[in-house]
Structure formats: structure tokens, C-alpha cells
Length: 231
Image (cartoon, rainbow, N blue to C red; front, side, top):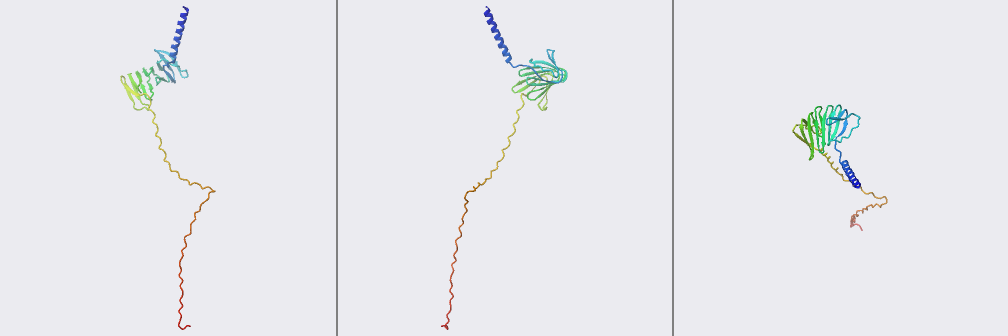
């Protein structure tokens, strides 16, 4: 009987160890505070669980749903690839589930969200939106309140009201490759005459003299007239 109990206990321990190992291998879900410049209250179900001030060690938040109240200064938060910035007076809740992030802002200061593509979404007080990544886009649905959407440069502003949706790219556009410069025109290389070795024999061309022209001369004999009186 004891052997059976030991075997069952060993099996239970082995199974428990397997479950723990699987849980450890699963990527941790949660929210990440990246910066605070003042006093921030972190709340869960309406109860303050921690108060952070500049210089405090920022905790790792494994819970995927939390509420934040910025008493003074500002804070920055990462959730589902989105960067959330809030200033003094802001009260908001964040829920992050895989490809969806829901942000709800209560009374107080507005909250700004920057997507992966660099687009900005500003939530006014008493606004709730959900941002879902799907098919290369982020679908923004305003459940209540009002949101202002603009591109990375701040232009093309769009106001989205309760019951409306907007779509933005999920990722920034690929950089445009610079055009390759035209190849330089190659100039033909001048031919360099081969150098004559110093000990090489130099051939001097011999010019034959022109043929001598012989001018024929005619001998003219002077005739002497003989007079009859001469002997």
C-alpha cells in the first residue's frame, strides 16, 4: 500500500513539475512602465497597490489589466506594442490581450498613444477605445468619447467619435532606397608608346641618291675657210 502511495506521489510531483515548466516557457504578459517623472499610483480593482516616484525601482507588471493615476509629473507605458503617455491629472485603465489593447480614460487629463507605425491617437477624458492589429493594419474603435488620430508628422488629423472606427498602418512604411548614381563615363586611355631599350640597335633608313643625268654635248668644229691666195 505504501509503495502505491509513493508511486502516486511521485507521479503527482512529476506532473506538477511539467506544468510549472510549461508555465515558465510561456511568454509573460503584462504592461511595462518605461518612464516616470513624478508621482504615479498603480491600482487594481480600485485599490492602490503601489505608488511610484522618481528614483524608485520600476516593478515588472505581469498583470495585463491595470489602472494608473498620475498625481504629478508624467509617465510612459508600453502595452501590446503601443506607447502610452500621460501627464498630471490623467486617470486611465489599460487592458492588453495579444493583438488587442483597450484604453479607458476617466475624468482628468487626456492620454496620448503612439502606434507601431508612428501614428498618434489622443484620447480625451471619458473616452474608451480598442486598438486591434489585424491584416497589416490597426483598427481603432471608439466605444465612447472622442479620439483624435494623426500621422507621424502630425498631419492628416481625423476625429473619431463614439461608434466610429478608423484604420492606420500596423507598421511604418519601408524606407525608399536611394537611386544609384549613374556610372561615370570612362575616357579612353591614351596609348603610351613602348620604350626602346637602350641597347637596342637603331635602324637608320638609307636614302639612295637620285640617278645622275648625263647631258650629251655636241662638239662643233670650227671650219676654216681656205683662201685661194694662200698656197
